[in-house]
Length: 176
Ligand SMILES: Cc1cc2nc3c(=O)[nH]c(=O)nc-3n(C[C@H](O)[C@H](O)[C@H](O)COP(=O)(O)O)c2cc1C
Image (tube, rainbow, N blue to C red; front, side, top):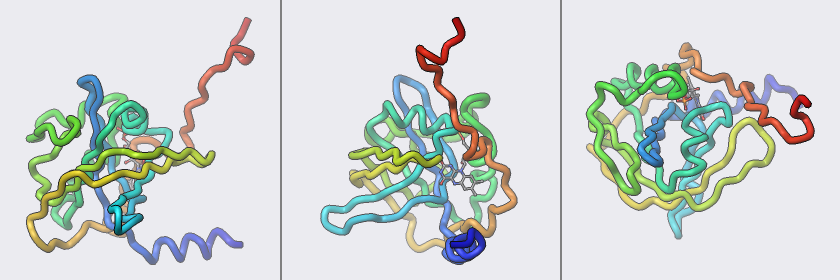
């Protein structure tokens, strides 16, 4: 299989972009996500994939709920903020109107189209992203909207590259 064919197929999908937020013990996190989809009708389920490199992933390991904000074509600045900066070094929520949603997940007031979910499973199959399956618990929409798609944000440089895998020390690898 060629990578070219794979890349052509998945880029033709031109995924809509979301901002995923979460919080645990007073620490807020959020990042831009292109890997997400509904995964069951009854019961309703939603899957999204977080990069192991991201601050958001590390907070999501401990949190129970996430908020999914569906971006519109007017939201490129928000995509840039959440997709190119990292919570490791900046507070992306500073200056934004935010309220606590279900389970404390931060809801961005400027995004009327959102889904709050409770995490059910987390699957690490060894790749650079982990899969989260979640149960929708609340939703709000401002009506039909034009999603901001990957093709409109392809120029953004992610705050963390997917290859930035943390290398946790082990007892035996530790220098003596
Ligand atoms: C167009 C685009 C799509 C992205 N898709 C994902 C994604 O599906 N999952 C993910 O975890 N990160 C994704 N990222 C990367 C994060 O949004 C980015 O590295 C962010 O700065 C991480 O912030 P954090 O360290 O505060 O969590 C994407 C970035 C861009 C620019």
